Amino acid sequence: MAAPASARDVVAIGNAIMDLVADVDDDFVARHGFERGRMILGCQPDALAVTAKLQAARQVAGGSAANTVVGVAALGGTGAFLGRCADDPMGRAFRDSLEAAGVAHPIDFGPPDPPTGRSIILVSPDHERSMMTFPGAAATLARNHLTPAHVTDGATLFIEGYLFYAECTAQAALAAAAWGDAHGSTVALSLSDPNCVEHNREQLLDLVRSRIDLLFANEEEVTGLYRTRDFREAAAAAAADVQIAFLTRGSAGAVVAHDGRVDAVPAAGVPGGIEDLTGAGDLFAAGTLFGLRRGLEPPQAARVGAVCAAEVIGHHGARPEADLQELVASAGLL
Image (cartoon, rainbow, N blue to C red; front, side, top):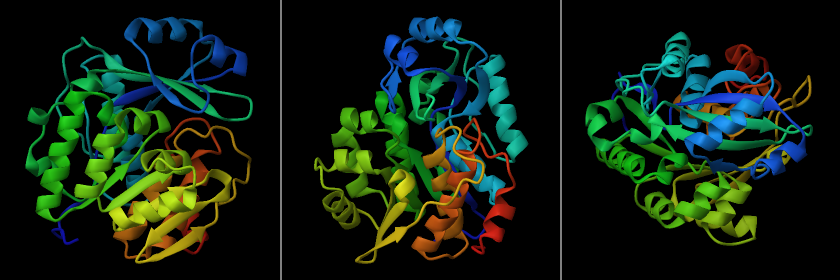
């Protein structure tokens, strides 16, 4: 799709979330009502109650779409994030993290109540992550906070599936998709989480079929979207609905369905071993989107994504710590 030469590489719309990351055992995960390997929504009292029981939790700016656009910036790209946080310490820390990464954040702060959203991320001994998210101010992002100029500032619009949990943010996402599509931007969607797909399937499927050019999903998400247990069947269905489907399969790598063909992309190695799977999909999307913007073919772009995903799962937190440009260059990809 054509976009103005002056456009940013990616404009991402999603929930502005601060991550609270803690190492726990699986008993803690089950005892507090978390679903292992998935994200559940929590109310403010539940989120505060669990937070009070955590020891040595690390506070890291997060949010799926925000992680992706920060990854794009770390690769040398340009980006902006559309999301709402409160005018409170967490909200200011979130905005500071974007500014430090070189990512624009044009949406004004909301009032202190509801507070900035947070995601409690419990990391099990095998590095699986289970999440409880209290959206807080993130769920107040509305269509009237956005303008077409916000959306069309990017050659690619990247939409976070988590927005479809709340009607207010879902309408904002749908408006953004319509504006981006009409403008000629490439419109990309991440399905975000299996529970997200399960609860919002019809709306997500309609969006995929009407507005989406690039689809990002893992195996459980895409099979849930198309209601099949057969991954190949789901991949074929996705390929029929969008221009390119990037479908991740954990340690088995990814599948890229495009132009009537399916290419397998191996997972990249993690030299120091896996520490935390949080952010793997977000950084895979970042590398892939950046690679596409730099003219790589879809499978090669996905290899950039695999390198970025491998970096982020090698440490705690969903934002890159190593020099992604150096890692990608050393892999001979850009």
